[in-house]
Image (cartoon, rainbow, N blue to C red):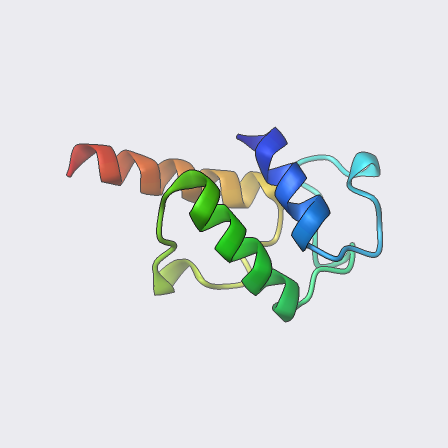
Length: 83
């Protein structure tokens, strides 16, 4: 999952700093992520992982790092499978 998220951020994140130099817990906002890029990342993530990110997760904390977004996605996928 983290590798897929890295690919999405590389294509959609418009980061000023290359992802190769960042670990999964690195602050993506410090690396140049902005609000417009978040929208593109969110749409790509929803399409790739076949989930809808609910409003309560549309915040800075969710998109702050690859690890943070992966944790939210795991939770959403678990909720989908248990429904």
